[in-house]
Amino acid sequence: MQESGCSGPLVISVVARNHCNLTTAVPACARRTHHTSRSQQTVSSDTDFEGGRFNGTGIALLARKFELHRLPTTLLRTDSIELYTENTMETLLELLEDEIKDIYNAENQLTKALPKMAKKAASESLADAFAAHLEETKRQIERLQKIGDLMGIKLTGKKCKAMEGLIEEGKEVLEEDGKSAVIDAALIGAAQRVEHYEIAAYGTAKAMAEHLGLEKVVKLLQQTLSEESACDEKLSSIALEEVLPATDGVEEEIEEKEVAPLKAKRKKTVAR
Image 1: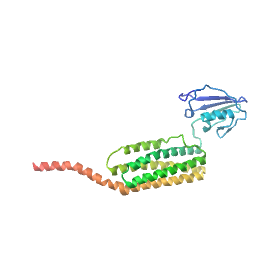
Image 2: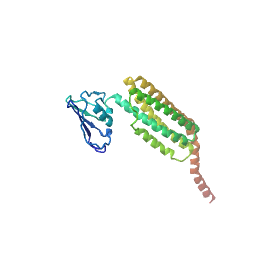
Image 3: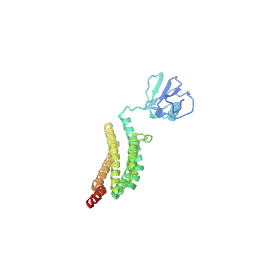
Image 4: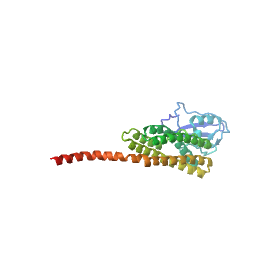
C-alpha cells in the first residue's frame, strides 16, 4: 500500500467468498499514511452497498479505516465490482453540504478575529457592535450545528479560504497606527467585507435548500441571513453618523501641516 505522499492512486483489493473482486481507488484527498502491504481478506458474500456505505464485516472495517464511507460508489459489474471514488460533486445536495461546511468554518474563524477588532476600535459604539456580533456569531454556529444534524453531515474538516483571506487582510488594519477615527473607518471596511461575504454565502445556501425542499434548513439559514444583514446596516450607520464625520478634523489637520511651511516661506520673502 502506498504512503499518502505518493502521487498515484491508492488501491485496495478485497476478495469475497463468492470470488467477487472489489477494487477501490482512493484519491489523494482521502488517503491516510499506513505502513502496511496490500492484503486480501475474506468477507461475507451478502455484502451490499447502501448510499455509498459498506455493510460487509471485512469491507466495513476497511471502509472505516480509510473513511471510504464518505465517498461516492458506483457498481460496474456483478461478477467483478469496481468502486471509483473521486472528489466530485454530482448533486445539488452535495454542493449544499459543502457550502454549509464552508460557512461553519468561516464562522469559527471569525470568532477569533472579532475580539481583536473590538479591542482595536476607538469608537465605543463600534467596539460594542463587534462584541455583540461575536455573541451573535456563536449562536449562528449553534444554528449551523442544528443544520448539520438535520442533514446528517459532519461539519468539520473543511477550511474556508475566503474567510481566511479576509481575516488576513483585516490583520493589516490591526497592526496599523494612526488617527483613531481613520483606523475605525478601516475596521468597518474590513468588517463589512466579511459581512458581505457571509450574506452571499448564506443567501446561496438558502436558495439551494429552498430548491431541495429543506424547509427547516431554510428557516435556520434565513435567521442568520437576517442577522448578517442587520449587522452590515449597523456598521454602515456607525460609519456614516459617527466615524466618517470624525475624520473631517483629521483632514483639516493634515491640510494645515501642508500649508504651514508655505506660509512661513512667504513671510520670509516679504521681509526681504
